[in-house]
Length: 250
Image (cartoon, rainbow, N blue to C red; front, side, top):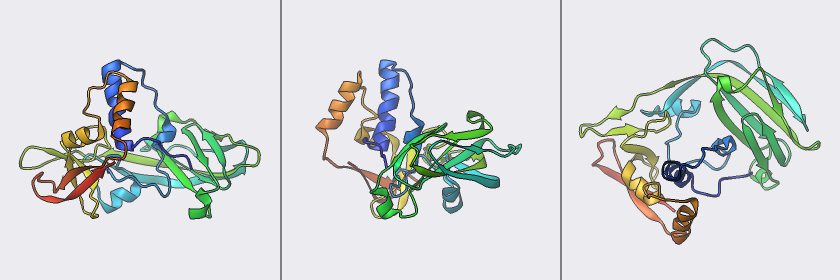
């Protein structure tokens, strides 16, 4: 399955810096927002899936609730999934695509490519999904693929509610950046499996998002010069003092 070529934390910070410093147009590929099976993110800044909300609802994240039954369509080549009437409280739609054969599948929220290797780890088909604002889709979702490329598309209405950031005794905000506001301490999972927080400035220095790049070429050169290096960022409890592990940026 296709995957980002740049570390997701680095990419996000790099994008912010390039937009701020060079006024580049903001062109965002929704396909890059997919959580791809077998490639779980370590930084919990995205937050907000239903499963995450049930296990650990982070400050600054999003609590999502499914509304009504999901609808599914399966086919090959081009096809359409008709959405049911929108519930009053719905503000997002979760779109899930399962590749049933290798191929490239395009739909309103983006596209995803599955290769034969994906079916070694996921014999029933690799799954990608994304939550999009309900106003971004109409009454139906159209899938496009090759005539022999099979897919299964599922849609579910969601109600998503942001959770405010928390504040520790030192006045630092902490939590996930999923709701759009970046906290002073960003939630991560350390290399030892402990859940904790890293200082946002230290993470920015490690990933390059704290650099004042003046061009995409300068940013890529910075990344190439540090290829193969590992930067260790300390992980703390929410107090910002008690160290519980390390977060490694490679």
